[in-house]
Length: 115
Image 1 (cartoon, rainbow, N blue to C red):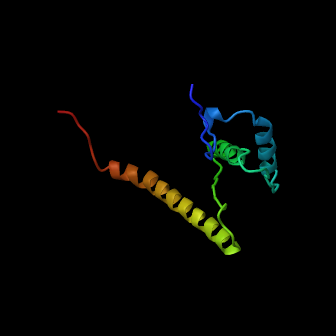
Image 2: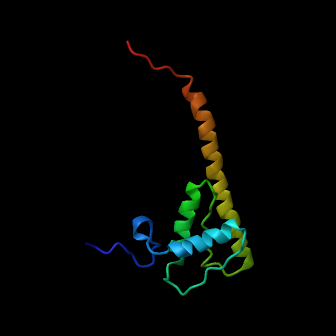
Image 3: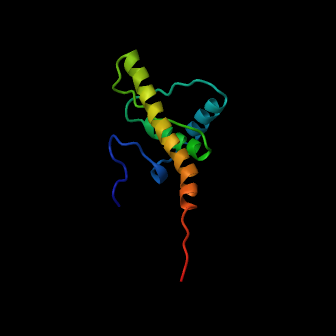
């Protein structure tokens, strides 16, 4: 059996294990409207934990964004990164909404028949 873990890549799905307590604490804090800071040394699984929580929230119809600010060194850069990610999310959301509305109308113009 090969090792499913790749150094430097967040763990996902079935490979993500044994963090139920941490997931619950973070979700409880978020649902209570509390701010929180997740602090640990590099390579302790912070990104994996947060991505796993985001996947669960997405399934519950929460809107989540992943914004990587690891290489940002200024407030301006931080704000630009956030704004860019929100813009990208907005474009996808608008496109999805358009497709959901326009596609049925477009398809209703065609008829398929036999014979």
